Image 1 (tube, rainbow, N blue to C red):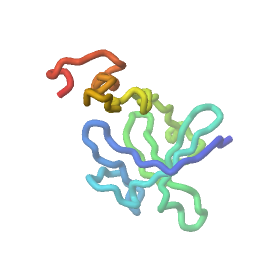
Image 2: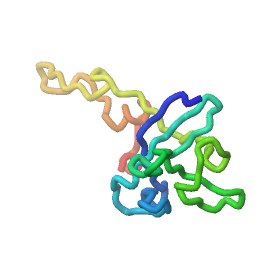
Image 3: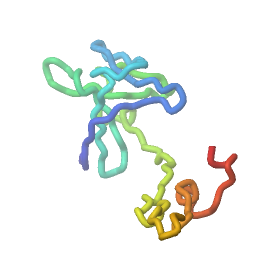
Length: 141
């Protein structure tokens, strides 16, 4: 059973190229995002994920065209892949995401002036972004 679906684009981490499917069901890469780069990502209860073209499908039946790999790991034509077959099932790999605490206004340098004209708090923005630890000039550039 399908749990949820999203509109996604698939982009190479290093190449920055987008994966796309043409009107014949062949996959190719594109430097630019086009409608052929849009895929429907469907996540199923068994954690498998399928990707189908958002613009191409079988004309008579309306069946979607899916990304798929055969047993040898070769790319299959989208119009030859069925969503319930292992060729179309992918297991997502979680990406490492850097999580940062959003700095509050109290953490940023505060320049409320006293009568002498000197700042009352001297914590730098680069220090806040480094978890409050001070950084040398070379580390912050």
